[in-house]
Image 1 (tube, rainbow, N blue to C red):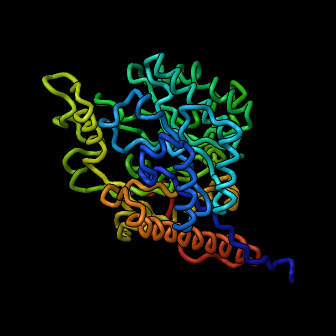
Image 2: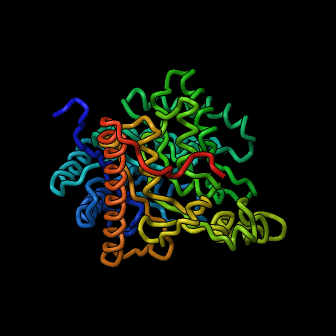
Length: 415
């Protein structure tokens, strides 16, 4: 073979699925009695829908959380039940189920507000996160996915100071265990009945860089990474390619270390009514000029978000090039191509985690949901394989022979 000829070697990413996609796969009464049954049954379900890995969802048990279930947009997904610490016997049982099903573990997800103002509640969350860390080590994964959160009583610069005070110790614990903490960037507008929109301070590249600089100062820069979810970018009027280009331009293309595959379909009518700040009044979460004491009413705070958009399960929304151009839905092919072109990552060692939050399809019946998730996972795999093929062909095979790429394609920062 000529020195100028490079072999065609596409590198697809590793497909995984977040177990919160089906909270009630194992009924609550059964999994409360036998905490690891839920993991065993989810591993079997993942095998049946064609996902070779799971992102194992953990959460404070409904009896222990500071947020009533009625106030949540989604039910609690504590597939990994850590009311009691994870021990060797439990770990061996789960690893045996992983071996039997052939399904692996990409990482563990625990999505909570780690900067919440109440000292007792924050300590409970941090203690639980340490249990998640320990479970991750025992199960042989090297990453945790979660939020940073926000203290709603403080402004952003004050939250940076609080991050340095209370979150850095968590990252030191992650470092001691050989773990990486991957931050998901959802702004979580419905977390509070206040009119704040950004309730997770790690919501965009600018904040990621500010937080990483704090981490570097304390020797835990390698522990802080981002689990990128394009749905949240669309929610804030951003597009993936421009965000990745910005990270590369600033020298932070290494920050993104994994992906959630979840889209967002912006409702132009909702944007016309409220703008990208979301519904700001008459939501139903306030009664008589005060926050409603009823948790079900407080769930209406999510109208800040759902008034203008709806989550997409990959493959379920119509292909709309105009919406892509307006940054009102995700261009999945360009998303996967941009990741390869602009970020510092090894695609073959990167997880692509399907996250299901498309409301009409959130069916809590395994047989009804199975073909839906199977189809979405197949779409995700196919679109990533297409991007891997394009990248290998254009940037490796053709580049080695000096053959130019045709056309222009989507460009960063274009308006």
